[in-house]
Amino acid sequence: MMISIDNIRQVAGLLNEIDGVSELSLTCPDGSHISVKKQPPVPTTAMVPYSVHPGAALEAVSNAPMDVELVDDEPEALISAKLVGVFRAAKPALAPQSQIALGQIVGYIESMKLMNEVRADMSGTVNDVLIQDGQPVEYGQPLVRVDLVA
Image (cartoon, rainbow, N blue to C red; front, side, top):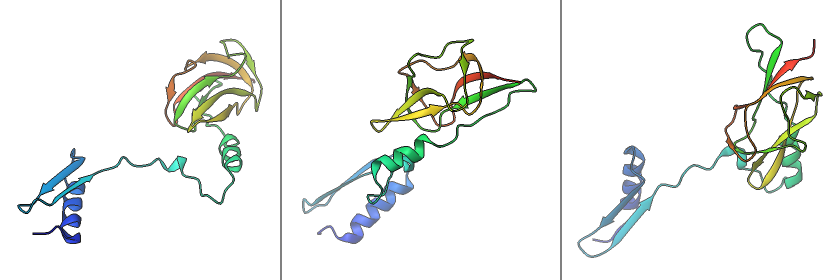
């Protein structure tokens, strides 16, 4: 029995139907062998069309507005990560009680070997820095808590 395209499709279909299995192998009596492996999904944020200049993609991500989330009824907000990557502190690093201005770079997120600026979307006083240099961050993770300027 030779392995046909239909056999390959059946094995791939089984692989997609069974949770927790990432590889299937099949050996036929005639010695023919097939092995199918699931590849992890590629993050869509990393996909950039080839027709776009890499600098343009970096600029688009770097200029994306940061989330500002009001906490309770106090004039306090959060600066959150817009990408998955590794947090890199700005120089000089932020510290509690330091002042930040609207648009100021508060750090960077290194993603796919690119340094993406994290900018303040408000002016205020740093209440707490929630992340340290070199720590991995996830999308939406709070990075800095800010007391807003009244």
